[in-house]
Length: 134
Image 1 (cartoon, rainbow, N blue to C red):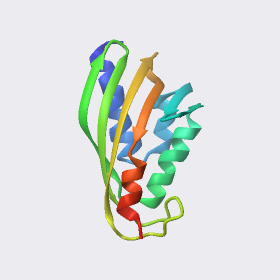
Image 2: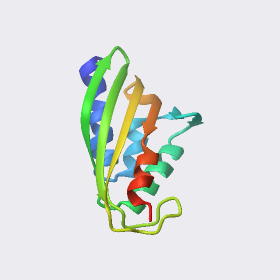
Image 3: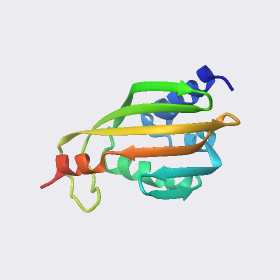
Image 4: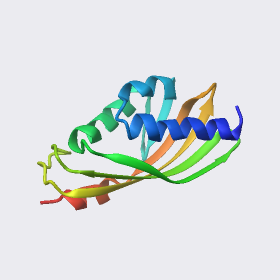
């Protein structure tokens, strides 16, 4: 696949999976054997991505993401996303505060056979927790 096709897959990740809260879209976007690097933790498969993002959707039901930067080279795409939503459900032990939040994330993904096969992701959870701290 070419660079533009790879970017289109990442745009679908943000547009369908993240902004439309369509967890089922993960099956079409991520490879079944996805290798997912979340900071110091590495997991495999699509389920861990669905679980993490599903937790965000439950706590921030109006969460919407936009692409800040999108850069591609070869089989890799780097993206910076900005998410905005309202804390309406429990998140990591913090009861809903009703506060507006901004979530920042940066990922490098490797595309293989039209799907995201590997992802190196950093989400600013510490910054998010500061925004909802009691």
